[in-house]
Length: 239
Image (cartoon, rainbow, N blue to C red; front, side, top):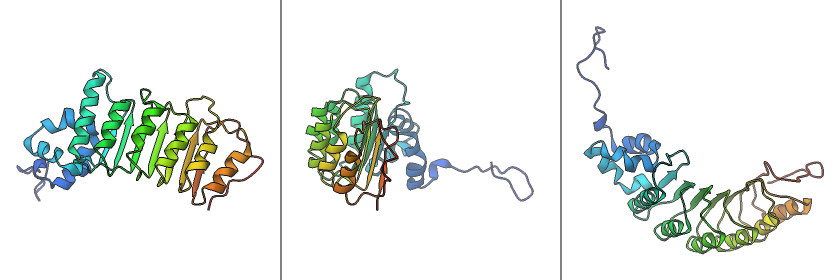
């Protein structure tokens, strides 16, 4: 509450509903997350609902894993589609934890021709085949994160070929051995600037050397948590 010069409380308090749209939307509402906006925030008042319908609000969408699972999956899927629909094709960056299927991912990509960043975490209902078929629609993709997704090294190589502009790729495995990941990356992702591998199996030094040789633009290589990695035989130098 504001105070007068004499130290007495002012009868006037700031009207939060009169804040500029760019502050209300970009700095406040977007911090709530897509699902919270659609289920609750947009119901507060007409002004908030108007702001929440602006396509600019939905250029970046994040569906986090901390959302209550009491809602049925199909309800959350419906909300995600609604968020994508509101972007009016302006969506450029989407991150989804858990709540995604092949069909939903296909819907997202069909409606989002400008999408350049896709992050999928623990979406166990996505298949390798479904992922590669969908990503064919996104040759302009620059950032891709696959964390605990059921995808093999063959699918990874296909993804590299159908998304030739990839600059950042993150692959996280759930403590499972899957041979061929590094070779698939080296054979298909020559434009990479940033590569992060976690939980992947690295059997030979040559696999890392292939990455360094075939990805000449690489600026960072993170092998946190990789298995059988022998650091005593060489030093990573990425320029």
